[in-house]
Amino acid sequence: MRQAIVELDRVSKSFGRAHILRQVSLAVQPGQVHALIGPNGAGKSSVGKIIGGFYQPDDGSLRIAGRCVHKWTPHAALSAGVAMIHQELQLVPDLTVAQNVFLGIEAQFGGLLLGSDHERFAALERRCGFGIDPAARVSALRIADRQKVEIMRAIARDARVIVMDEPTSSLTEVEARHLLSIIDELRLQGRSVVYVSHFLDHVLSACDYVTILRDGSVVRSGPIAGETRGSLVEAMLGAGADVSFPARPLRPAPGTAPVLECIGLESQAGLRGATMMVRPGEVVGLIGLVGSGRTELARAIFGADRGTGRVRIGGEDYDRRSPALSVRRGIAFVPEDRRAQGLDLAQPVRQNMSLARLDLVSRGGVLKRRQEVRQTRDMIARFGIVPPDVDGDIAFYSGGNQQKILLAKWSIGRPRLVILDEPSRGVDLGARRRIHDFIVETVAEGAGIMLISSDLEEVLALSHRGYLMHDGRLIGEVDCELLAADDVLRQLFEAQSACGA
Image (cartoon, rainbow, N blue to C red; front, side, top):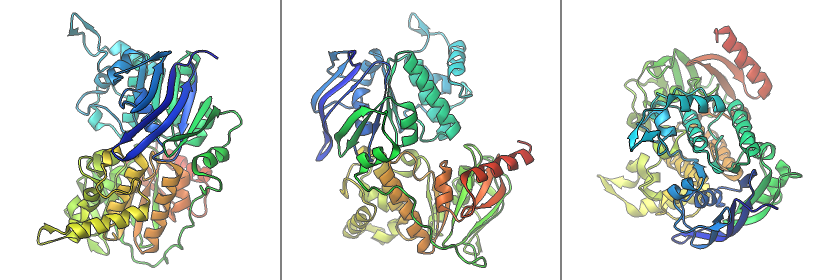
């Protein structure tokens, strides 16, 4: 066997009392696509960050191309040909796409920048085929497009090793397949990819080798040949793990008064004349491609974007909408970008959970600390948050546990309408099941849920009804309990064609 390009030898890492990695050893060969899989909190992203220079091992060693490295930093890693695409995107919002892609490797002469280097970007775009405007500001891009910029930035550095942490979590299936073809091209060039993902079908189709982690330790490593989705799930979660969807509660009676009504709702973000409703005890899915207007509809209802048209909550008109007023009216909104829009990473678990409903743990403007701690402990137990520390540093929690904290935050106070935008993005099978259970529990208690997800199977398995969306408009309605995914996609594309798409 050739000399490994990356080797971890008995690497351990802790943050305070939390042991993230325990004696992890693995090797990545040149030209190999090496998958890292495991439950949330297993240590996958931490391994990637050690390879990329973002974390330093407490014990053990890291070798790059046979050389043991010390004082390993992101800059040192890039200089050695190691780049990383983060799950939580690391872009500069106020810079353009091209400026982000070439940040730190700008064309220059004598210390002076030579411009945006349009030819270099055009060549990179021809290779990637993402169709992103190089002059667009990153702050104006959707999450999926920001993820493409991260991918382009890593490829632009001509790295020998690219660590990809959940690179397809915000991409449509078509976009994900395109990325996998780029990864195959990188492999043929002799480059190595460390591929962290919860999408096991992508792992099985794109990777050569797999290392499975659980609780910070390696369960096993070996070739992907001979593995199945079932064998990977069993190794990750243990024998007999259940990865099916929970049963939906019975749908509400047709005459049940809606908890949400939208009539001709429009917004400057591109929403056009949306008319729809959600009943208590009902899950209603929004079905459409990235950019179809699903998030824009959610934000207009919640008051995060200004909109015109009529919104009724519980039969009462809701004008002059705002996030603060929406919370008072019993509306919860779990956004797709949990770190930028959902959580305060500078505050501990306890304060993040209490933030939306401080009125429940205070009196006369004075916080009731014991009640807040008790409430947080109850939510930690209910959602299975790890580590179970009321004052834990949320910035170091796994993506799945951060998402559970976000759901717990919005379940406090028992809202009557819950809007979920990509609730299972970037989380493992166990966390996905807990999120799905939360959806079923919430509608069983009488709340209505509006569900947005790029995973069509998730929408169809959990929703009673679904609205088809395209170009900011609702273009059809489907019964999610009666139709298969292929039938729904066929209806979506037919409706798009009828609209002149």
